[in-house]
Length: 273
Image 1 (spheres, rainbow, N blue to C red):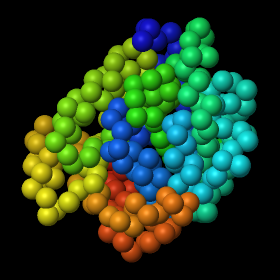
Image 2 (cartoon, helix red, strand yellow):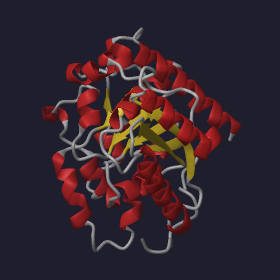
Image 3 (cartoon, rainbow, N blue to C red):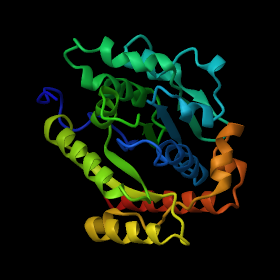
Image 4 (cartoon, one colour):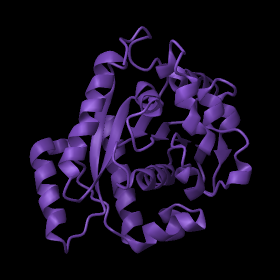
């Protein structure tokens, strides 16, 4: 990653907070967290935009945006062919919108390889969007499960990163990788980037391993780990196939209630910051 020749921090104005949901490891509940945390924030009165920056487009699908409705996507935004506002679509959740992704997003990295400021494509698009959408309070970016130009674009545009961490054997190894990435982006591209917090996902209180992972992560990361852990929950797994966040599919299930508590923690940390 080259030294930053852009402005310090993100260059965004107003009361908007931009949060990347990122982990270089797949299958950790990253997209599920982006969808349901965004929904929970909207449920408590925030106005939220989710930017789907994963070529798989699972966040778009999970919010009910099927392929036929993705005429303008984050690929067009990253390539500079469309404004972010042109890609944004309403969802079934009041106060929650999404900028969907399509498979063509996978080619963006190669197409942008010779662009001088390729790390800041998304940051510029978000800055322009904020100027015409002052009522947005949170922008959440669902990153691909890899360290790619897309992930770097997301972190270059963000104020902070939320890291979902699956309660499994290699959790700490994966955590160290994403923390190194955040540090490198902070050093070279976005000096204002912070770690908002680490959320334990797929937590099973009946499993000794989940408790061991929780103890290890909390001992290493302390207060950076949210008090709320997201449990393994069938209703959370079922919801995307219905094109709904879990909170819309089954508000009373343990997973939905956990994401509401997590949203409260995120807001408290933002206010404290």
